[in-house]
Structure formats: structure tokens, C-alpha cells
Image (tube, rainbow, N blue to C red; front, side):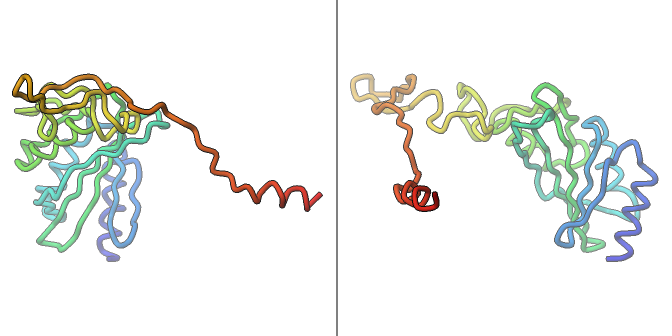
Amino acid sequence: MKEKTLFFKYLLIIFPKWIDKIHFKKKEIILKVKNPNYIFPLLYFLKYHTNTRFSILVDICGVDYPSRKDRFEVVYNLLSIHYNCRIRVEVSVNEITPINSVVDIFSSAGWWEREVWDMFGIYFSNHPDLRRILTDYGFEGHPLRKDFPLSGYFEVRYDDSFKRVISEPIEMAQEFRYFDFASPWNQFTKEFKK
């Protein structure tokens, strides 16, 4: 582990423009990339450099933090079989900024990037086939965003009279209610403390 630590500290010295910080969590190396434009050259380096050889892209996933300026975080999980080591590369983006596709480096990235695009709406430039993969083609919105409504925008049902599936706007059968979850015993404890 000490050799890995030294090597990745060396990476921070070599690439101060690319890497914001390196830290270790539960014996896993986490690289935080400063800019989405640096993700392609960094992953290329990590795959083909002799001392890294992270040749397997395990997955790409997205995380939504609505309170941040750069709302989304794209996480690349890589595996080096040669050195028996895993690494996580994280980059933050906003809703507008595209990320360069890494399909040219890792061919399996095509499916992962399509999933992140479909679920979060993060755009990957230079992707050969960026289209929805888990939702329908006419689907509106991105379901894993925190601001996506739990019930969705449309409901889909089979109509016997038309003999087909139709989609229509959601109609709430019951009005939304606010519940007070405070315990009735809290009132008594406040009165006794006076």
C-alpha cells in the first residue's frame, strides 16, 4: 500500500493541472479531477502507463447534489488486474457542461455513458450512439435527478377501448397533505420544564 501511496502522490506532482486531490478511503484510491476536459487524457494515462495498467472499466455512475454549483458528479471505477488495485476517478460537472466520451479508451464505456445520460442527463460529447437505454424514447426528464417527481410526469396504462397502451398526464386521486410528526408528549415535557 505504501508503494501505491507514493506513486499516486507522484501523480499529483506530475499532473497538478489535472488532479485536484488524492485521498484513500477504505483502502481505495480516489482521484478528484479538476476539470471535465482532463478526464480523457487522465484515463488514457491510467490505462496505458506501465506503472498503472488500469485496463478494466468496472462502471461509470452519476451522483446528483442539487445544492452544489457543479450539481453532478461522474464517477469512473477502474481495475488493474496486473497490480491488483482499484481506483475511483471523480469529476464534477454542471447541467450544461459536456464530458468527453471515453469509448475510444474503454469500449464498455458506451453502455455506462448511455445509462448516465438517460438517468441524469449528463451529456457525453463524441459518443458514437448517445440515446436512451433504460427509459422509453418519448420519456420526459431524467429519473435519478433529485428534482424529478416521485410519481413522474405521465402515467402509462392499457386502454381496452383503444386496444393499446396510452400515456396521459398524472392525475392525483388524493390531495397532498402535510403531516405533523411531532409527538403529543413533547407539549407536556415543555410545560413541566417551566
